[in-house]
Image (cartoon, rainbow, N blue to C red):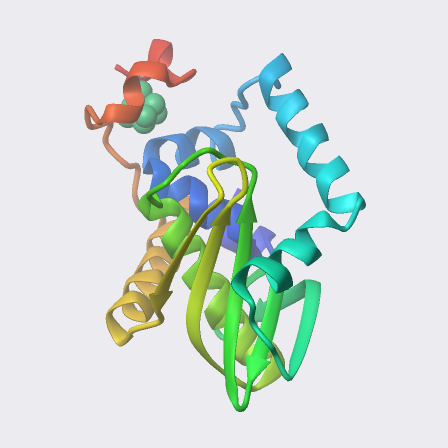
Length: 195
Ligand code: SF4
């Protein structure tokens, strides 16, 4: 599979790459996928139920006490210049500044890098989709009831663009990432075939 086989790369691919480039390679080049475990399935169902009930909308508006001029939920966003797409949980505007909101069904209190960069990728997509400027990304961890936010800096933007470039190189077979021992290896399903 090459980058040309995709009209657009998904934001999930970006998140997977940041979590571990080797996992990205196994999934999208070698087509080796971790079977869905009971916990994964249960987590997904709970999250969908939570979204269906519309509780997350109340959370976004209520807990942050934001008074947006405009807010949109579950919006498809894309960047033609980077060839990436995704669905953002919410985007709102105060004046001419836009804010991206990502809601994770997680007990984390600190964001791992993959969550930050995925949200920045959403910001870049939203800027092109809505012809707007995204000022901040906000991530809400529902179980720990924790909000974090970051300014969308030039450095973060550059880094996400670099990641997209690297992803395309892997898909085009120009580069195979080398396994590196990281914290996530301990519980990684791919460990048996990795090293
Ligand atoms: S074992 Fe470690 S390096 Fe290998 S795929 Fe898993 S997380 Fe990545």
